[in-house]
Amino acid sequence: MKRNYVLAGLVILLVAVTLYFVSYLGSSSNVISGQAYLSPGESTQVSFDFSEAVISYSDGRALPLSVNVDNGQIVSTAGPFNGFYAVIIMGSHEVATITNNYTFPLSMKYALVNAGTSTLVYGAMSLLSVVLGVVGIVLVVLGVLRGRRRE
Image 1 (spheres, rainbow, N blue to C red):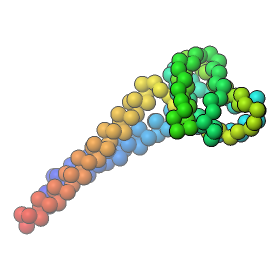
Image 2: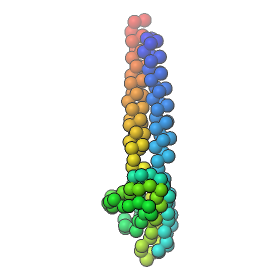
Image 3: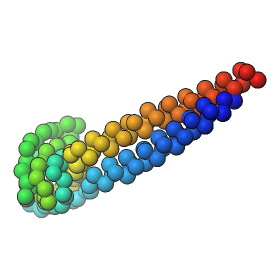
């Protein structure tokens, strides 16, 4: 067994696992999700402090709901994509209000995601951790296989 390869591979694997968990914890703090049952005219509010955000929601009927934002502006609305709608918002210290603008009650799920640069950083960290994990595994396997051939 090539001890240097195995040791280097294990250290890289440890770094990859640590980096992955840090990126997972950081990215999960950039997501607010929930669900609500809304009667006709009823609203649910989501408070957040992201400078750029995307609200994605689904009401099970693929109908667009009324979305309003305090202290910010709606940049774009898109959908439906497989029953989901997306609303892009800019501003800060915002409150998004999702209102059932239909005459029947509905159940809806929503997720609000930080679309700022921190999300990109955490995504890059996660991708880097996967690459480092593969490199670490390859080094461990090479170290074990090279050592067995010489013995």
